[in-house]
Length: 288
Ligand code: ASP
Image (cartoon, rainbow, N blue to C red; front, side, top):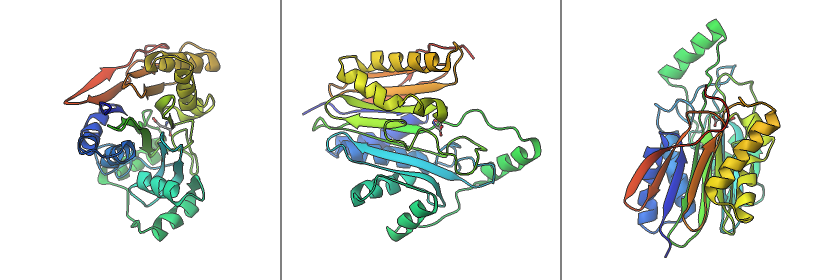
């Protein structure tokens, strides 16, 4: 029996890991725990970067990106630019279970969701409508747009990961970041570890960030060392010290965890057994 672990991006990840911990404590799988955890964040209207209440694109439409990956089987599912469906992560899971494809986008993803019993709903809240009115008036985008990414290790020693986001607020319609790209926003392999990313998707996906973290763990790096090395790669790739914000979390089968970011201000939540806590990640780029 392994000691179960959950790791989640950002302070709102604390509530998510608490939900996921109930699944793991009951002997549930890492995949079920990761999905339960991020589903909780999707339903929270206070989190304006995920699911219900997530900020819309430049056309006033909420487009969601989500993915899941099972470290035991290597199976994965993802959706991009999905409109009008709250639990994008559960649609990603349905894509994985369906098994014919890995990644569905736009109207095709929505059609798949409706065919699989998901209900259409308005994802805008009073807050996100007001934000959009202001955005139309001023053209000012919101800089922070935080994805919930969760890594889970269950009592059987299996790893899984799930993530979901409304992406960059005010983004171009059809823009998809790193989050639903397997190897970009997340990756899991029981033999090496699991990783997830948050931050500027364009810069994370150009270095296959989450895949790279997992491959470095496969080569013997600890989760912390692997995250730091990938953050340094982000900075080198952008050829400047003050790179955009790119953040990674990682976990291996021994329950060791890690996290790092290019810039100051990235925190991630951890649950191990009875305890949960918020960790301030070390950063290697600029202070702003
Ligand atoms: N990585 C996400 C994206 O680019 C956003 C975030 O995590 O902050 O869509």
